[in-house]
Image 1 (tube, rainbow, N blue to C red):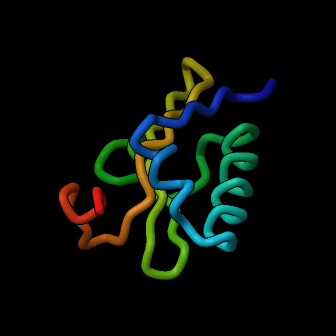
Image 2: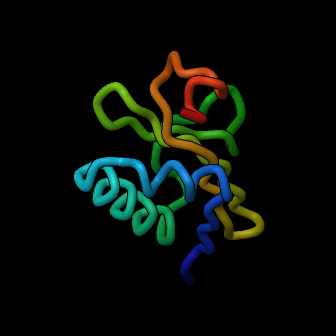
Length: 86
């Protein structure tokens, strides 16, 4: 059974500004998450994870019991929220 993957509004705005290569990589990661919520590296909690593309990271929340995933953002590790809003 496939998992549900939901994008946040913040992520949707960021996605449109990314390069085509980054967009294709993220689409591929979303497809992976539909079948396996355990991909990526857990960050302190099993449900908070990241997947890396060079210096950037895709951050998401994965809930096995709900079979769902929320894509939060795609940032560099050192980017703050104010830097991402440009």
